[in-house]
Picture 1 (cartoon, rainbow, N blue to C red):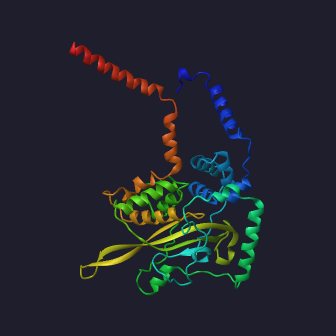
Picture 2: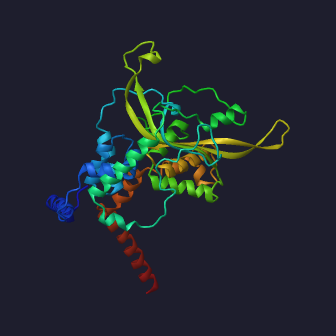
Picture 3: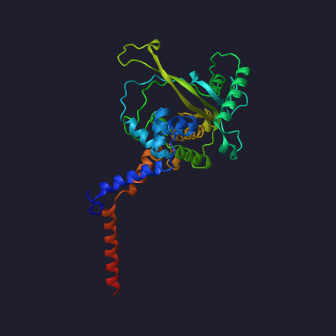
Length: 371
């Protein structure tokens, strides 16, 4: 639709883009991609997760291009992702093969394999560190050398260690139900639009690429009472998992036909949610269900909130928004939500003028009646 007031808009748009470039360059500093990769890992992890594209380098580029705007960076990554061909699908990843960097449980003090605190802000004082204003490369280099030398001195066996899952320990005691593997091919939400009611695989995909703040807010809403799901975190894992694929032309594929293509760093959460069920004697009995969350990089808050919503959506209930899959899944996508909100900045002259004309006509008719 054409708008007369927008005549000459091409020149104005070009001027706006030049002004945008000026705003980025006027400080006369260049933010190197390597600097972003080295210092903004949490931001990179968030962008990769929300864009469903695991590439730290491209995420860093998108952050630089978007001048730190995460919604713009995710939009850029999603747009680039849509241009990429898909030659293969990876094989199912087993979390037990994770090379664990951090592993904790809020459910038990002692867990098989032990707790591994790893790197986290959880145990730091949330006070501004003004020393960072004057840090130097030389000071950082000396600190790293001391840390590495101390680490080498206490490091034991270099044997690769795999950690068991906490829930498996409970299953061995008969405290959690054991299910047969479901080898149904997962729904691919990037190839097929959501259809309601949807599958659990689709729900998990949408949540793992959901906007971090939105997923966290919806999980928090459930904790506060909109569904009253209050889990105990059974296990949080952060680490790298190997990715394998198999040639599409292979027939009668065997495990040994798989070939390694790389690794990705993820956060995985299994939450234990108490539920009341009827036993064989029709009496209330307490059981636990598992809520699952996983996302690229280290983003534990999002993964925990995702595990809450996973359990919520397994029990549909229109009385609570957090149990309504259509409400949750359609409102946590960062590109969809920011895009629709941003479209309000586009010209709406015709529709708004039409509304104004209607209001003027009504007021005119009211004045004529009153006179």
